[in-house]
Amino acid sequence: MISYYPNIKRFIDVVTASFALVLLLPLLILICLLIYVEDRGCPFFSQIRVGKNFKLFRLIKFRSMTGENTKFENAFQPGDNSRVTTIGRLLRKTKLDELPELLNVLQNDMSLVGPRPEVKKYVDRYSDQYRRVLSVQPGITDYASIKYRSEEEILNKHPDSDKYYREVILPDKLKMATRYSECIAFKNDLRIIIQTLEILLGPNN
Image (tube, rainbow, N blue to C red; front, top):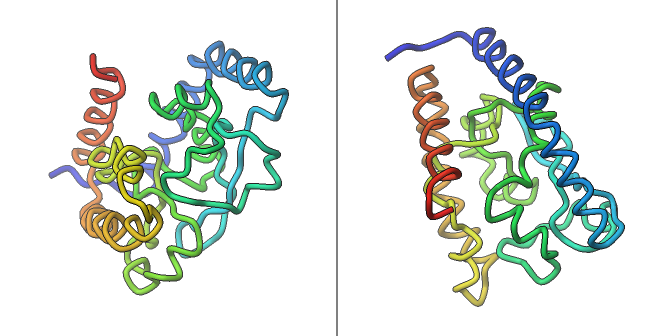
């Protein structure tokens, strides 16, 4: 197992995120235009999440729902797709809505690979478990992102999606996040990135 130091991991994050943003710039501009054309709103959505050492930061995503960003920035309802726009459905399905998180990587709020950052209400509920998980930088993708690729579809099958997320999915995510935080290695990160790309670029996507 090839372990690596935080400064090396950070170097890889910055170089990769910078390259990706430059390479994907035409796509990012196109998505911004499509979001704006559909409902004339701001193409970006931001939400307060809990980062390393419980530090709060503002997660940036492409907006996939109707409504003003400031009105819904602190709202979070797992499985809620009642306000999802047409372009938003496509963005969510392909995970393109998460591309702006590359900016969070450059701002050193996130890493390419690491436990997905949660909203404060769920972190507060499982604060003891999160002490270990939040000793590392949260990331764009991780073991849970791969396993719960179709999380919205799973939640939509349950009448109380918030309860199911809170009591079933989140504890499972915490187990995987803890496993990652206890063994951070270049080999593991590379495997997670490759598996994520295979899912996103696969024929069933």
